[in-house]
Amino acid sequence: MLARNPNLRSGRRSPSEIVTVHMKDGSRRRLFCKYGGYDWHSYGLWGVAYEVEVYRQVLATLDTTTAKFYGAYTAAAPDKIWLILEYLEDYEQLKNAPQPGAMIETVRWLGRFHAATEELLSKGAIPFLKIYDVAYYREWAKRTLEFAASQRRSFPWLPPLCRKWEELAEALLLPPASIIHGDFYGSNILMSSDVPFVVDWESAAAAVGEIDLAFHTEGWPEEIVKLCEAEYQKTRWPENPPPEFSRRLQAGRLYQHFRWLGDHPEWTSTQGFQQLRVLAVGLGVI
Image: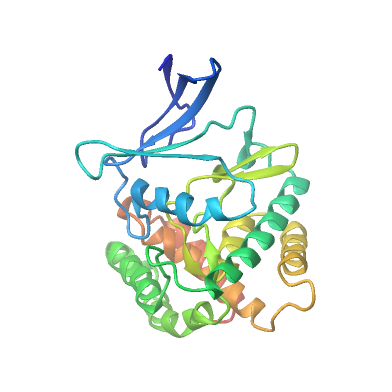
């Protein structure tokens, strides 16, 4: 090892470093090392050891752009695992350069990825892989209600919406399922010459791909959102998109809000509830 430098992009979930190593052929290589055992505890976030298996058993088997997986190292304690990846230099987070062209290229990447992983899942179950099932979706509404207890008088529409959520979430159980990223925001997408490299796979699971699309387009102008939706459908289903697409996407947008309102009590903000209500009213569910 020649040098260790902190990763300036490291989030609060797991610490990481950029490590420079000396290779057997005399060359130098910079690696990205992410350390487990310090994981940000959150429902729906399964940690570095899980992410290692996503790279090993899913991403390494696909022809897609992501950081090269060099392996993992397990220290004395089983949870003290290191994820070792190619360090992606000279890449910019999509959130720092949110150009419509990059959004479209990322949506095309997403459509191809979901089509490929739908085929992968059709060949048989992947035992380690989490599945977003009815209990998973139900728990987000339950957590949102619990975290909003002190504010519930301000949101009388919330309990009826949460009761209705399980019925609405049935759209997210409709086939076909793919492997989704689960946290598909610009902060987890690194761009180089309009080519996306997707990182941070700790929430990956078997679920409908429209969830990733909902995350990716959240907060964008309507004209960009519509372009992304059309491009995703054209890439994912070149022949004909399924009739359930719009229903799944709408449910995915509701799930996205429950996902963050029910994540941690300190994130359960008044603004978040206002956004959830606007969405629910727009969809005619309250």
